Picture 1: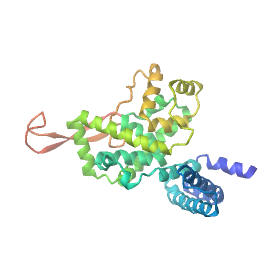
Picture 2 (picture 1 turned 180 degrees about the vertical axis):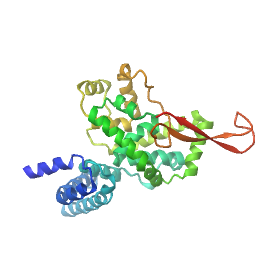
Picture 3 (picture 1 turned 60 degrees about the horizontal axis):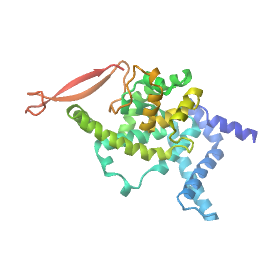
Picture 4 (picture 1 turned 180 degrees about the horizontal axis):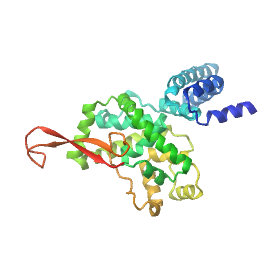
Length: 312
């Protein structure tokens, strides 16, 4: 029992290298399989597909093996990570996938695919999870740290999350979403020409996507009342709770901001401020398009590219 508890503790702590991940995964295969099978069993029960017989136990076990295989294949690319957290996230994402016929048609648009792709990636990647605060609301690393009230160690992790995201994470997420460079530029053009319309559409789709993917949250990550949020920040605990839930729930993020606004006077309240490109060191270069021949965008002429630089 002591060895198993020790192994569980190691699986819940940060793994920094691929070699360390491989060694720990090989050593902990029985524990990982048991955890994956338990998730499958619970899913079958919650969806009314479970019966206490050998055939359903075998089904849960086969499902557990499949989920574990997904973890072993993708886990090496997610280092640094916490193996148990990563396994839970991969399983949650798998079980939260909507049926194709039930998929909301609006999420098939370039904007919908981008937002769904970013949020889907955030379920299995802390880098993507932290980046959501920037892509949806325009918050940089320092602002995220202050809004979430993170400590020194957690703050350092945020900067590392943003760094890895701009190096490789964003490109991978966009590729998985299937959004092309041309489509990204079209969204940026729409944002420049009709900012309020795009903001309203993004707001609607973000709520749709967040509502769906919050189903993958652990059971102890529900929306909190204003008083419970106040208690959490006053007692200074549950950093992981803050990061996960507030990235996935705009209403709670606004509630937390209002709760802490006396400490955030130089940060605006969370509003939809869609950013399609990752935040770069020292600034971000965004592509916009303006019509030549008239300031109102209705005159003829070719589009001219304009660079806009915003301080990070």
